[in-house]
Image 1 (cartoon, rainbow, N blue to C red):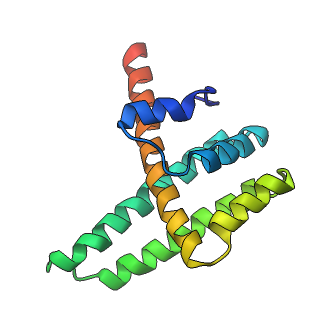
Image 2 (cartoon, rainbow, N blue to C red; image 1 turned 60 degrees about the vertical axis):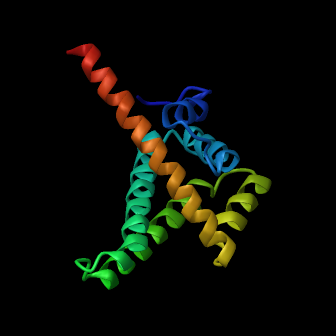
Amino acid sequence: MDNLPPDFLSEVEKYCGNVLNRKDDLLIIIEAYRNNNKFNDFEKLSFTGKYVNGLLRVLKSSVNIPEVESVEHIKRDLSENMENIVSQLTEVTSNINEKDKNCIEDNYIKLSHISLQNLQQLAEDLDKIKKYLNHIKRDDSNKTS
């Protein structure tokens, strides 16, 4: 799949059975990737979001699981990958209109408590998107087999 259909985010919501937290921002982000012809980079972003969301789940549950000994390693990995998401967002939005660029910067790139919460919600949404993309790939490979 080299491009996303116009109703892609609605299809993700149907597949996952719940609403995306940052749908309006995702529309801006997807359009920026589309305009830059970098769909593969969007897939990388969704993979990173899925990974970050998994790390967040492990970190939240690590309090109750005494076997999780490397909490500091998880925190470092989480921090690096969240920075990776911010970096990817900064790069892809560098050439979009000022209004949308400011929206993404305010919501994710400026370091604040709110932008961190927004980034966590975006990672959760990207996790859902990655699962849906994997589902589509499996369906496509089953059809060609």
